[in-house]
Length: 358
Image (cartoon, helix red, strand yellow):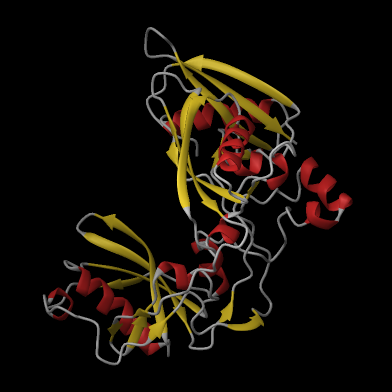
């Protein structure tokens, strides 16, 4: 969902969006995380489109002698949304590779706790969802670890927690020691059922690689509903007991296993994995129709068939996205992207510009 005051990490834009006039090439997030940057730079100015500031960074990278760059952050002025400060890491042509450092894992009830980066690369064999009173972080970890140990897990990852009164509802994913790698696709993949997706698939080659692939997963999140249905998981209620209100601290054990981002992974593909698309913010209007919002990086790879704008006073980002989605549905769009939000020079109203995609 697009934020009022955008201060966000810009994920990979298409490297083909940079004019050939400049030599420095933009990297994807996957490429950038594998090599070492030699310098961070920033440019500031009035940029009306994503391509404008990507071109400006490319030009600045050329002056620094960089072969490539990766945009990390874009700060937009709250008073004028065309004024931006854009930050990027620069890389030499012979940039050294990043060496993975082993991480010592914590262990609870005989089960290791994976960090997010490790968990997202691996295919879970089960999911645990429990609800109860867990006053400390140790209680949370022990409660999940007991369920994980009972299911024969080697490791767990707590992905989500929600407050329900004085209780917490926890969602965790369980992994075998030889867990298969998840088939990942970038969050900026083009929707395969869009016009742009079908055109890219017809073109083939590198263009087709930019399109969502059935059975591939988002690298930044798990889909709880998907896995809960896959493993027929129900929420387990845990009544408060003296045991789960204990305040004992747990520290990493002496035999904590070292792990890198690919620890425990094999090259096997997960078997019989049904189709799962990247998770996007979805707007549902009163009659039940739905539409998904594209992020900046995905929209940069596509061509809108129309643009609409509307003006009003909105308190939350959700209000803006709902009104943008509703208008997009009325225009027959499958997807929409909030391209710009312009604050009135006087008064609280904003004008929202929305690109529409089939």
